[in-house]
Length: 564
Image 1 (cartoon, rainbow, N blue to C red):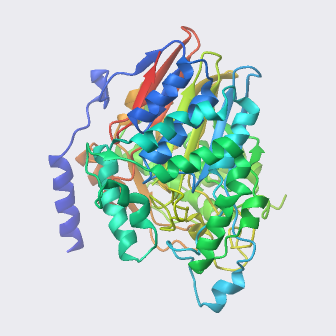
Image 2: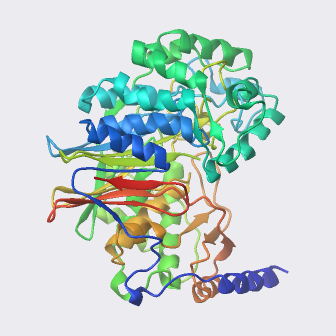
């Protein structure tokens, strides 16, 4: 039966081949790149892109525009973002000509202990409800970015989102579909305030595509943030409302947890991939997994390996397996665990790991080191500043916990802690959980080149690696790099304590040809089909020679790149 299924799957994929030959010169692109001399905004929602562009045109800089667009996305794409979640950013500052990294992720409740879960006989933190809720870090992230780089007042930056929240906007097809999938689930779980927050103001039913969506509660919350700054969120009535609500739901997040929260400026880390410096943020995120993959893949000559070929996907998958074993063992909040970042990214270590790869699908363990649903957006301005920003609630809308009359849902990132004692990512009070969301940046010869990101949970390091390879190894332009067929690999160890049991599963989009699928099966790989988790690529490229920005937003979502 298993062989029959595999052969049927191959036949299905063969009937749906859409990949184009690279000889055509324009592989995979749904449209041309967007060009602009003075600025560029690329987000997952056209109205948010236009808000960011208006901020730039009215004299704001890239950071002002990014905050404005992010605030709008929390309203317009509540199925993947919002002020109940966390934020990470990499900024290229046009004045100082250097990169800055911001980790604006929140910490676990200080009164919730590992012993509590053990007494409840839990081996995993629930995916929804009050227990996985950690402090939302996005608002503090906005104010840290604004304090360091912003130019316009927050009243002006948040004004467009407030206006749209009050007056409404037409729902896009994709977000309408997400809402109609998510809201009934939360209602079925009996979570309070769902109807009042998301349905009541629309005549008692969820809007469909093209119908007007409003969130007056969120407008009021944004106004409080404008009037009182970050303290209105972390030291005022909002925090107290959240504490009361979460405790009523059996959780532990407190107003004191809010008051104690602070973002952290961190140094981005990089590896050089064939002359291009690829930058990620250090853990508690998973960005360095992409760098580990690239370190291994650089050992191979891809000038003789075609895009989408069996050899391409095989080597990529094996590199991913190796990096993710290390991810499971070593990635965690660096305030609690000494993650050996420099050793994990060293050339010698990459060569050791690469030596384990052979011609057949393999299983691996972590290397021995000596002691020593989400939104992505990017903005660039006429001063040379570029920001790569990612923000999320996790699991789409989040935990199901919508505090009364605040207009947003709290994240459930705490689910990503391990409850097994003695691991890097084991739950502790006041600790940041392992994070999947990661922004990325590429420089070349000390100058900014590409700001980009790809949404999709565990897929993100794989997506980053695919984009870099598409640009560097396969000569695609910015739009082609995002539209090209994608694939991912599931299975293997995870930071939640899961161990590797088999070679896992490669899932491909329909653009990967039959010959590749058949070749991978011959190498012992199990094959599946994509589940729609790969969408969400946005990117901006700086052409230093012509002084022009190139923007890209892929076809898998509602996004738009726009420049001027």
